[in-house]
Length: 263
Image (tube, rainbow, N blue to C red; front, top):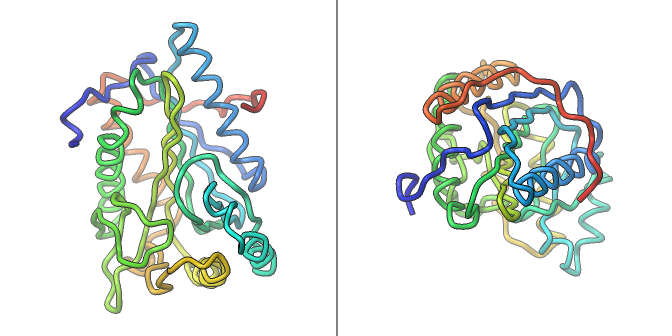
């Protein structure tokens, strides 16, 4: 399915809210906030009420976000302890995928939206937003392309990879969580300092009994040494401004909504 096969325009209102979270609240707390916010969208959809799209952008604390399948593996307990040994907090996310690691050299971007038949547009959404993030990398001076690298962590067809002399590296990965009438599209981007991520993920995947090539763990600075987190966020905001305009929306700075009751 391509991005043009199904309508992807947001259905919640004329504004795309851009909210930068001032600081991480903690590994589990940041994930729980996303679940609670998605519950608000589900409730709005059920009530037939409009709700504007929301982009939450934040710089995370050192976290290894495990998938639901990871948590059921025999080696999960040992893998979680390895995270702590590396000074990363283990957390289990509700969205799909395998273990991914991030820290203050990374950016997490959560996009919440009302969307009828969100499940039917899932693949098209992966394609559309992968292209948006590639454009943001290009704006920040980082060459990238879409596609899974053999042996990458948290593998996905729409991973974003960057070319380096020795081996391509994964720069960003995305996961979705779908509820009736709405979706959460979450992307984590590795901008700087990949070494701690490589070290913790090597141990985590070994203990989970999963294959992973450590050479695939990298950062945007491996491709373009001058890029930094604020620069990438500015580039992403510019690309989302264009995306909003193409979808009949206006991007507007907004405070992060207060914490809702957890879903």
